[in-house]
Amino acid sequence: MSTEKIILGIDPGTTVMGFGLISVKKGKMEMVSIHELLLKKYPNHETKLKYIFDKTLALIDEFHPDEVALEAPFYGKNVQSMLKLGRAQGVAMAASLYRNIPITEYSPKKIKMAITGNGNASKEQVAGMLQNLLKLKEFPTKYLDASDGLAVAVCHHFNSGTIADTKSYTGWESFLKQNPDRLK
Image (cartoon, rainbow, N blue to C red; front, side):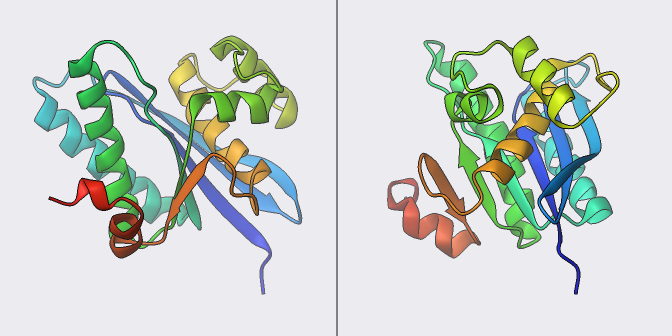
């Protein structure tokens, strides 16, 4: 019986979407992979959403994560941007739930706090701390969205067994039960 757990972290986005995978063996973390989806080149929002869904499924099928952690959308002033970001997150959630992978959401402040100890840390500070925590000689990507995806996975590992500021779902039924307002 293996004690390894693989966690896929996702930072939803419609321009760049970050993914990070970690393996945890006997409490020790190791980076498995880091990806970013560059979505600027796609002609419309629907095509971007399909690509996000397909890529999330491909990552799940390739790496077989035990759990998926997502960064929850933050509240902004631009309603259209929030709507698009929420759709991107929803599509990544749907792909995970389609493969029956439990998902957990974390707020951006919770992720930054878990990684750096400061809920207002910059993306650069988060990436630097991840490099230190995962003992990486250099950071494997120039996109901070990818490092944010990795940060979500590490945050999830650090918060395993706690419930504060998170929402977990084990499937569509669980999601709908915890979010009755989203059912129309």
